[in-house]
Length: 388
Image (cartoon, rainbow, N blue to C red; front, side):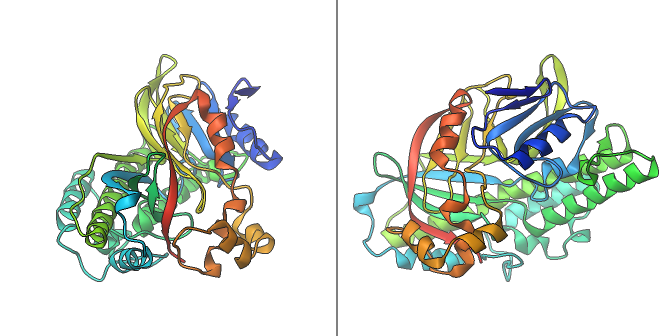
């Protein structure tokens, strides 16, 4: 761990200068307490660095939570081993692609039976929160159980003992994005109204006790619940397709579902603070967690060590070294194919910006995180599903 200044602690051994400068700027906001913590996967973000833990007193920066509120991971350990799997993996990949809408703007055509009780739960929560999600997205019910694009994925993986784990990454989809975008704009409007000077417009904040703050928290919590249930719904569908592929029922030996873009009220360093984890998971002592690599590299099942200086947090993944546009200029389809050898995936140039080489080496990230989490399992992919 490196102390950059009294208000910024850093666990990233790979950290470019622009990311460092962005983190320093955010750490100087007057309500940061006691310091901002940079995770090993830290990279440039909007306003605040992706891969950072931002504790605040009496205020929250909506852009520091991010536009994919509640984004995170879910994994299920099954009773199957690699020896029990059919040789041809393509049918399972294609079945998953048919069962779950992929890509940005792709949603379900109708509400399926498994999604109905989850949607009912979200309707009840929204009523209690005093808002209608349809004001943000008229089709929000159809978004539950859809993946998205970018670095979101569904995978079948094997651990060090050849046990099969089902693994996926997604968040609150279009409805969560619109909720986040609205409140980022509200925070910026508040800053203009009160002549608040900011080092970056995306560091605009909402003050606790105001109507704007309370509205954001209510809708943020709803979006976080949507994201969690979205992952549950997709995992149930993946299990169903996997069960048909292997010709037997799936017994869940373990299920882990954790956010890595979220805000909660927590106690740290003797005070009650708002903790915004932007690309970081909660890693209190004993907390189970999931840290994925990029497509084609390892992912990890971990347990938290409860590092107080890191405010009980750890990285959420590999972290980008190349922007999407830079990756497309740097890497080729042939390099992607080479990186994905032995993994069943949809061969498409759309995924060049997700090539493992565009990310930090996940093993280095995990070495940097050794003070934060202990590794329980190292997973390798055998099937990868992504949206364009």
